[in-house]
Image 1 (cartoon, rainbow, N blue to C red):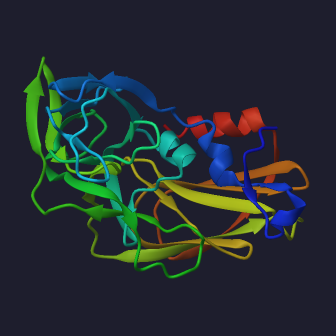
Image 2: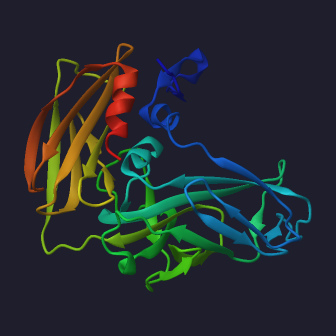
Length: 295
């Protein structure tokens, strides 16, 4: 059993408790490292095709001075639904569903120095075939939600940056979204999933375990690249403002007494409903395999 953790309420005991957030992240795609000379124009290319171009004098320190020493850059790329579950980054903005064309995070490393961008970074994000409507994609950045209906302990959200659709262009025979970013953060290319009717979908865990040390649930859509993290309420999880008539899968995970529990159910058409979902013990490798099948 892999045991990433969070600090319990009684920190003096120095006992670490299981947490699904950190547990799942251990199986997420790791960040890639690059070393760049900030005095030169430099383009780095991620393993999944993300191209980032830095211009001379782009980096400044906390006092506003231009950085000239070599800088290590970490790039994390996330394109598929299983990676979104592992990273814990759903595709929602203020409880509205998004279809993602790809997420990435950019982090600079220069010892203890905090760096910022003085010049925007030019980005080319590959257009994948699974995206249903590339011309509708907009740019979103990592933020905090202001409309959470429940206190779930998770407040990461995507905030739209501008209203114009992203530019599309070809480079070396491949199609890319082209845009620029002005901060070190999570970034995402998305479109809002529009629907005249929205529903609240809930699931209740059917299991003899009453008190889980931690639990989490996701609504994973089948026909679009989208994942929703559901709100926990006791033995129930709820997803709000979900467009109707969409095919999806619910996956639920719980942890108690050094054992992981798992359940899943297919939904042919989303609607206002309460499902009762049996969850059963599962071994760690089997759980990871089930999540990877979501890609």
